[in-house]
Length: 377
Image 1 (cartoon, one colour):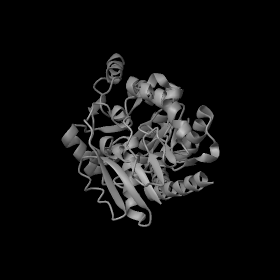
Image 2 (cartoon, one colour):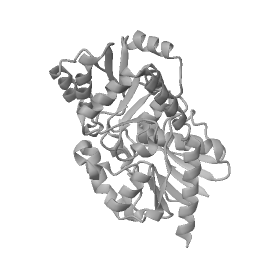
Image 3 (cartoon, rainbow, N blue to C red):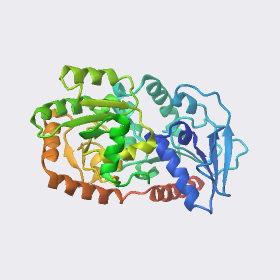
Image 4 (cartoon, one colour):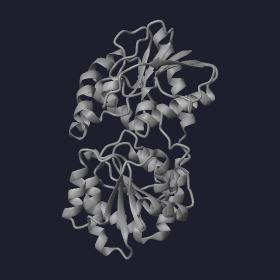
Protein backbone atom coordinates (compact mmCIF):
# COMPACT_ATOMS: atom_id res chain seq x y z
CA UNK A 1 0.00 0.00 0.00
CA UNK A 2 0.96 3.61 -0.56
CA UNK A 3 -0.38 5.49 2.48
CA UNK A 4 -0.60 9.24 2.89
CA UNK A 5 -0.82 10.79 6.38
CA UNK A 6 -1.38 14.40 7.34
CA UNK A 7 1.34 14.62 10.01
CA UNK A 8 1.12 18.30 10.86
CA UNK A 9 -0.27 17.67 14.35
CA UNK A 10 2.88 15.73 15.26
CA UNK A 11 4.81 18.99 14.91
CA UNK A 12 2.42 21.78 15.74
CA UNK A 13 0.38 20.12 18.48
CA UNK A 14 2.95 17.99 20.32
CA UNK A 15 2.13 17.64 24.02
CA UNK A 16 -1.62 17.46 23.43
CA UNK A 17 -3.69 14.31 22.96
CA UNK A 18 -4.02 14.69 19.18
CA UNK A 19 -0.39 15.73 18.73
CA UNK A 20 0.87 12.82 20.83
CA UNK A 21 -1.38 10.42 18.93
CA UNK A 22 -0.12 11.57 15.52
CA UNK A 23 3.52 11.55 16.58
CA UNK A 24 3.38 8.10 18.19
CA UNK A 25 1.45 6.61 15.28
CA UNK A 26 4.10 7.78 12.80
CA UNK A 27 6.99 6.89 15.09
CA UNK A 28 5.79 3.32 15.63
CA UNK A 29 4.80 2.77 12.00
CA UNK A 30 8.33 3.85 11.11
CA UNK A 31 9.77 1.32 13.57
CA UNK A 32 7.69 -1.66 12.49
CA UNK A 33 6.37 -1.38 8.95
CA UNK A 34 9.04 -1.78 6.28
CA UNK A 35 6.66 -3.20 3.69
CA UNK A 36 4.14 -0.44 2.99
CA UNK A 37 5.15 2.96 1.67
CA UNK A 38 4.20 6.21 3.38
CA UNK A 39 3.98 9.84 2.31
CA UNK A 40 3.92 12.22 5.29
CA UNK A 41 2.71 15.79 4.89
CA UNK A 42 4.78 17.84 7.32
CA UNK A 43 5.57 21.52 7.87
CA UNK A 44 8.98 22.78 6.83
CA UNK A 45 10.59 21.90 10.14
CA UNK A 46 13.23 19.54 11.51
CA UNK A 47 12.06 15.92 11.41
CA UNK A 48 15.27 14.29 12.67
CA UNK A 49 13.65 12.82 15.79
CA UNK A 50 11.37 10.67 13.61
CA UNK A 51 14.32 9.61 11.40
CA UNK A 52 12.09 8.16 8.66
CA UNK A 53 13.05 4.88 6.99
CA UNK A 54 13.54 4.30 3.28
CA UNK A 55 9.83 3.52 2.78
CA UNK A 56 8.76 6.90 4.17
CA UNK A 57 8.82 10.06 2.05
CA UNK A 58 8.17 13.58 3.27
CA UNK A 59 6.24 16.28 1.50
CA UNK A 60 6.96 19.61 3.11
CA UNK A 61 4.16 22.12 3.45
CA UNK A 62 5.11 25.78 3.26
CA UNK A 63 2.45 27.72 5.10
CA UNK A 64 2.48 30.92 7.11
CA UNK A 65 2.15 30.00 10.76
CA UNK A 66 -1.02 31.22 12.43
CA UNK A 67 -1.81 31.52 16.13
CA UNK A 68 -4.41 28.75 16.07
CA UNK A 69 -3.61 25.13 15.20
CA UNK A 70 -7.12 24.40 13.94
CA UNK A 71 -6.93 27.27 11.47
CA UNK A 72 -3.62 25.92 10.17
CA UNK A 73 -4.80 22.37 9.60
CA UNK A 74 -8.06 23.63 8.09
CA UNK A 75 -6.01 24.17 4.91
CA UNK A 76 -6.23 20.84 3.04
CA UNK A 77 -3.16 19.18 1.59
CA UNK A 78 -3.02 18.87 -2.20
CA UNK A 79 -3.11 15.18 -3.13
CA UNK A 80 -2.73 15.39 -6.89
CA UNK A 81 0.11 13.32 -8.38
CA UNK A 82 0.79 11.59 -5.05
CA UNK A 83 -0.21 8.07 -6.21
CA UNK A 84 -1.43 7.08 -2.76
CA UNK A 85 -3.90 4.25 -2.08
CA UNK A 86 -5.41 5.75 1.08
CA UNK A 87 -5.20 9.11 2.86
CA UNK A 88 -5.41 9.53 6.65
CA UNK A 89 -6.14 12.77 8.53
CA UNK A 90 -5.61 12.18 12.28
CA UNK A 91 -6.89 15.52 13.65
CA UNK A 92 -10.65 14.82 13.57
CA UNK A 93 -10.63 15.11 9.80
CA UNK A 94 -9.94 18.84 9.80
CA UNK A 95 -7.99 19.59 6.62
CA UNK A 96 -9.45 16.72 4.58
CA UNK A 97 -9.49 17.62 0.85
CA UNK A 98 -12.85 17.95 -0.85
CA UNK A 99 -11.57 16.45 -4.11
CA UNK A 100 -11.27 12.71 -3.71
CA UNK A 101 -8.78 10.53 -5.59
CA UNK A 102 -8.47 7.62 -3.11
CA UNK A 103 -10.22 6.27 -0.01
CA UNK A 104 -10.24 8.64 2.96
CA UNK A 105 -9.94 7.70 6.63
CA UNK A 106 -9.96 10.12 9.55
CA UNK A 107 -9.30 9.68 13.23
CA UNK A 108 -12.24 11.21 15.05
CA UNK A 109 -11.22 11.27 18.69
CA UNK A 110 -14.57 12.35 20.09
CA UNK A 111 -17.65 14.46 19.38
CA UNK A 112 -17.29 16.80 22.34
CA UNK A 113 -18.22 19.90 20.28
CA UNK A 114 -21.62 18.25 19.67
CA UNK A 115 -22.11 16.88 23.18
CA UNK A 116 -20.63 19.75 25.26
CA UNK A 117 -20.28 22.77 22.93
CA UNK A 118 -20.07 25.20 25.85
CA UNK A 119 -16.73 23.63 26.91
CA UNK A 120 -14.97 24.06 23.55
CA UNK A 121 -13.02 27.11 22.35
CA UNK A 122 -14.98 29.31 19.91
CA UNK A 123 -12.57 28.93 16.97
CA UNK A 124 -12.42 25.14 17.20
CA UNK A 125 -16.18 24.92 17.75
CA UNK A 126 -16.80 26.98 14.62
CA UNK A 127 -14.40 24.93 12.47
CA UNK A 128 -15.63 21.60 13.85
CA UNK A 129 -19.36 22.26 13.46
CA UNK A 130 -18.84 23.77 10.00
CA UNK A 131 -16.44 21.14 8.66
CA UNK A 132 -17.57 17.81 10.15
CA UNK A 133 -20.91 17.65 8.26
CA UNK A 134 -18.94 18.01 5.01
CA UNK A 135 -16.10 15.68 6.05
CA UNK A 136 -18.10 12.65 7.21
CA UNK A 137 -19.75 11.87 3.82
CA UNK A 138 -16.26 11.79 2.24
CA UNK A 139 -14.95 9.21 4.72
CA UNK A 140 -14.68 5.56 3.76
CA UNK A 141 -13.93 4.68 7.37
CA UNK A 142 -13.30 6.31 10.73
CA UNK A 143 -10.71 5.41 13.33
CA UNK A 144 -11.53 6.32 16.92
CA UNK A 145 -9.92 5.74 20.29
CA UNK A 146 -12.53 3.88 22.38
CA UNK A 147 -15.62 1.73 22.06
CA UNK A 148 -17.50 4.53 23.82
CA UNK A 149 -16.50 7.03 21.13
CA UNK A 150 -17.37 4.52 18.41
CA UNK A 151 -20.97 4.30 19.62
CA UNK A 152 -21.15 8.07 20.11
CA UNK A 153 -19.92 8.75 16.57
CA UNK A 154 -22.21 6.19 14.94
CA UNK A 155 -25.26 7.60 16.72
CA UNK A 156 -24.53 11.31 16.38
CA UNK A 157 -23.21 11.27 12.79
CA UNK A 158 -25.25 8.36 11.41
CA UNK A 159 -22.09 6.57 10.32
CA UNK A 160 -22.05 2.74 9.93
CA UNK A 161 -20.67 0.99 13.02
CA UNK A 162 -18.88 -1.61 10.88
CA UNK A 163 -16.81 1.16 9.25
CA UNK A 164 -15.59 2.56 12.57
CA UNK A 165 -12.37 1.00 13.89
CA UNK A 166 -11.19 1.33 17.50
CA UNK A 167 -7.47 1.73 18.21
CA UNK A 168 -6.81 2.50 21.86
CA UNK A 169 -4.11 4.98 22.80
CA UNK A 170 -1.24 4.34 25.24
CA UNK A 171 1.11 6.10 27.61
CA UNK A 172 4.37 7.10 25.94
CA UNK A 173 7.61 5.35 26.87
CA UNK A 174 8.73 8.29 29.02
CA UNK A 175 6.06 7.38 31.60
CA UNK A 176 7.39 4.75 34.00
CA UNK A 177 8.10 4.49 37.75
CA UNK A 178 11.10 6.52 38.85
CA UNK A 179 12.77 7.24 42.17
CA UNK A 180 10.03 9.07 44.08
CA UNK A 181 12.38 10.87 46.47
CA UNK A 182 14.49 12.14 43.59
CA UNK A 183 11.42 13.32 41.68
CA UNK A 184 10.11 15.14 44.76
CA UNK A 185 13.49 16.80 45.21
CA UNK A 186 13.49 17.96 41.59
CA UNK A 187 9.97 19.39 41.93
CA UNK A 188 10.97 21.18 45.13
CA UNK A 189 14.10 22.61 43.51
CA UNK A 190 12.42 23.93 40.36
CA UNK A 191 8.83 24.62 41.45
CA UNK A 192 9.18 25.07 45.23
CA UNK A 193 6.60 22.36 45.98
CA UNK A 194 7.93 20.64 49.09
CA UNK A 195 4.87 18.89 50.55
CA UNK A 196 2.74 15.94 49.53
CA UNK A 197 0.36 16.76 46.72
CA UNK A 198 -2.62 15.67 44.67
CA UNK A 199 -1.96 16.14 40.96
CA UNK A 200 -4.22 17.06 38.06
CA UNK A 201 -3.03 17.07 34.41
CA UNK A 202 -5.28 17.45 31.39
CA UNK A 203 -6.15 20.94 30.20
CA UNK A 204 -8.28 23.77 31.54
CA UNK A 205 -11.53 23.16 29.66
CA UNK A 206 -14.67 23.42 31.84
CA UNK A 207 -15.49 19.79 30.97
CA UNK A 208 -12.39 18.74 32.92
CA UNK A 209 -14.25 19.70 36.09
CA UNK A 210 -11.37 21.46 37.82
CA UNK A 211 -13.95 23.50 39.75
CA UNK A 212 -15.30 20.31 41.29
CA UNK A 213 -11.78 19.15 42.19
CA UNK A 214 -10.93 22.44 43.92
CA UNK A 215 -14.19 22.37 45.87
CA UNK A 216 -13.60 18.74 46.91
CA UNK A 217 -10.06 19.60 48.06
CA UNK A 218 -11.38 22.49 50.15
CA UNK A 219 -13.72 20.06 51.96
CA UNK A 220 -11.01 17.58 52.96
CA UNK A 221 -8.20 20.05 53.70
CA UNK A 222 -9.22 20.76 57.34
CA UNK A 223 -9.50 17.00 58.03
CA UNK A 224 -6.05 16.00 56.81
CA UNK A 225 -3.40 14.91 59.31
CA UNK A 226 -0.61 16.00 56.96
CA UNK A 227 -0.26 19.02 54.73
CA UNK A 228 -1.21 18.45 51.10
CA UNK A 229 -1.16 20.73 48.07
CA UNK A 230 -3.40 20.47 45.03
CA UNK A 231 -1.22 20.94 41.94
CA UNK A 232 -3.00 21.77 38.68
CA UNK A 233 -0.77 21.62 35.61
CA UNK A 234 -1.45 23.16 32.24
CA UNK A 235 -1.29 26.26 30.11
CA UNK A 236 -3.41 28.92 31.77
CA UNK A 237 -6.30 29.24 29.35
CA UNK A 238 -9.56 31.16 29.47
CA UNK A 239 -10.81 29.33 32.56
CA UNK A 240 -7.70 29.82 34.71
CA UNK A 241 -8.94 32.95 36.46
CA UNK A 242 -12.18 31.22 37.42
CA UNK A 243 -10.19 28.45 39.09
CA UNK A 244 -7.81 30.86 40.81
CA UNK A 245 -10.71 32.99 42.09
CA UNK A 246 -12.49 29.89 43.41
CA UNK A 247 -9.39 28.95 45.41
CA UNK A 248 -9.35 32.49 46.84
CA UNK A 249 -13.05 32.29 47.68
CA UNK A 250 -12.61 28.96 49.48
CA UNK A 251 -9.60 30.26 51.44
CA UNK A 252 -7.19 27.72 49.99
CA UNK A 253 -5.27 30.03 47.65
CA UNK A 254 -1.92 29.06 49.21
CA UNK A 255 -2.66 25.35 48.85
CA UNK A 256 -3.75 25.25 45.19
CA UNK A 257 -0.73 25.64 42.90
CA UNK A 258 -0.84 26.46 39.19
CA UNK A 259 2.72 25.98 37.82
CA UNK A 260 1.51 26.69 34.26
CA UNK A 261 2.67 24.89 31.13
CA UNK A 262 5.09 22.04 31.88
CA UNK A 263 7.41 20.67 29.15
CA UNK A 264 6.53 17.13 28.12
CA UNK A 265 9.80 15.71 29.43
CA UNK A 266 9.02 17.04 32.94
CA UNK A 267 5.54 15.53 33.16
CA UNK A 268 6.82 12.08 34.24
CA UNK A 269 8.65 13.77 37.13
CA UNK A 270 5.40 15.37 38.32
CA UNK A 271 3.46 12.11 37.97
CA UNK A 272 6.10 10.25 39.99
CA UNK A 273 6.39 12.94 42.64
CA UNK A 274 2.61 13.08 43.15
CA UNK A 275 1.02 11.10 45.96
CA UNK A 276 -2.34 10.83 44.19
CA UNK A 277 -3.54 11.64 40.70
CA UNK A 278 -7.13 12.83 40.30
CA UNK A 279 -9.00 13.14 36.99
CA UNK A 280 -12.61 14.32 37.53
CA UNK A 281 -13.43 14.89 33.85
CA UNK A 282 -17.08 15.00 32.73
CA UNK A 283 -16.43 13.60 29.25
CA UNK A 284 -13.52 11.88 27.48
CA UNK A 285 -13.08 10.17 24.15
CA UNK A 286 -10.18 8.28 25.74
CA UNK A 287 -8.40 10.21 28.51
CA UNK A 288 -4.61 9.78 28.40
CA UNK A 289 -3.50 11.48 31.66
CA UNK A 290 -4.86 8.84 34.09
CA UNK A 291 -3.18 6.10 32.03
CA UNK A 292 0.07 8.09 32.11
CA UNK A 293 -0.25 8.40 35.88
CA UNK A 294 -0.85 4.66 36.21
CA UNK A 295 2.22 3.94 34.05
CA UNK A 296 4.25 5.93 36.60
CA UNK A 297 2.81 3.89 39.46
CA UNK A 298 0.75 6.75 40.88
CA UNK A 299 -2.56 5.74 42.53
CA UNK A 300 -5.34 7.18 40.40
CA UNK A 301 -8.83 8.54 41.06
CA UNK A 302 -10.96 9.06 37.95
CA UNK A 303 -14.51 9.71 36.77
CA UNK A 304 -16.92 6.82 36.29
CA UNK A 305 -18.35 8.25 33.05
CA UNK A 306 -17.89 8.03 29.25
CA UNK A 307 -14.76 6.17 28.06
CA UNK A 308 -12.77 6.34 31.29
CA UNK A 309 -13.86 3.01 32.89
CA UNK A 310 -13.23 1.28 29.54
CA UNK A 311 -9.62 2.45 29.65
CA UNK A 312 -8.85 2.08 33.36
CA UNK A 313 -10.79 -1.10 34.08
CA UNK A 314 -11.01 -2.10 37.74
CA UNK A 315 -7.69 -0.49 38.58
CA UNK A 316 -8.68 3.08 39.49
CA UNK A 317 -10.80 4.48 42.32
CA UNK A 318 -13.89 5.87 40.64
CA UNK A 319 -15.83 9.02 41.47
CA UNK A 320 -19.08 10.55 40.35
CA UNK A 321 -17.70 13.77 38.79
CA UNK A 322 -21.03 15.53 39.25
CA UNK A 323 -20.93 14.98 43.03
CA UNK A 324 -18.35 17.10 44.86
CA UNK A 325 -19.03 15.25 48.10
CA UNK A 326 -18.18 11.92 46.44
CA UNK A 327 -14.93 13.36 45.03
CA UNK A 328 -13.93 14.64 48.47
CA UNK A 329 -14.75 11.36 50.20
CA UNK A 330 -12.71 9.31 47.72
CA UNK A 331 -9.76 11.69 47.97
CA UNK A 332 -9.85 11.49 51.76
CA UNK A 333 -10.15 7.69 51.69
CA UNK A 334 -7.08 7.32 49.46
CA UNK A 335 -5.01 9.84 51.42
CA UNK A 336 -5.74 8.13 54.73
CA UNK A 337 -5.30 4.51 53.62
CA UNK A 338 -1.68 3.82 52.63
CA UNK A 339 -2.31 0.11 52.00
CA UNK A 340 -5.07 1.02 49.54
CA UNK A 341 -2.75 3.51 47.81
CA UNK A 342 -0.05 0.89 47.42
CA UNK A 343 -2.54 -1.65 46.06
CA UNK A 344 -3.94 0.84 43.57
CA UNK A 345 -0.44 1.84 42.51
CA UNK A 346 0.45 -1.75 41.61
CA UNK A 347 -2.87 -2.48 39.89
CA UNK A 348 -2.68 0.71 37.84
CA UNK A 349 0.88 0.01 36.74
CA UNK A 350 -0.15 -3.46 35.59
CA UNK A 351 -3.19 -2.06 33.77
CA UNK A 352 -1.06 0.45 31.84
CA UNK A 353 0.98 -2.37 30.28
CA UNK A 354 -2.12 -3.56 28.40
CA UNK A 355 -1.80 -0.57 26.07
CA UNK A 356 1.02 0.14 23.63
CA UNK A 357 1.61 2.43 20.67
CA UNK A 358 2.95 -0.51 18.69
CA UNK A 359 -0.45 -2.15 19.04
CA UNK A 360 -2.11 1.13 18.01
CA UNK A 361 0.07 1.28 14.88
CA UNK A 362 -0.63 -2.36 13.94
CA UNK A 363 -4.39 -1.93 14.37
CA UNK A 364 -4.27 1.27 12.31
CA UNK A 365 -2.55 -0.50 9.42
CA UNK A 366 -5.20 -3.24 9.65
CA UNK A 367 -7.87 -0.52 9.39
CA UNK A 368 -6.16 0.83 6.26
CA UNK A 369 -6.23 -2.65 4.68
CA UNK A 370 -9.92 -3.18 5.45
CA UNK A 371 -10.83 0.30 4.18
CA UNK A 372 -9.04 -0.25 0.86
CA UNK A 373 -10.61 -3.70 0.45
CA UNK A 374 -14.10 -2.26 0.98
CA UNK A 375 -13.38 0.65 -1.37
CA UNK A 376 -12.42 -1.74 -4.18
CA UNK A 377 -15.61 -3.80 -3.93
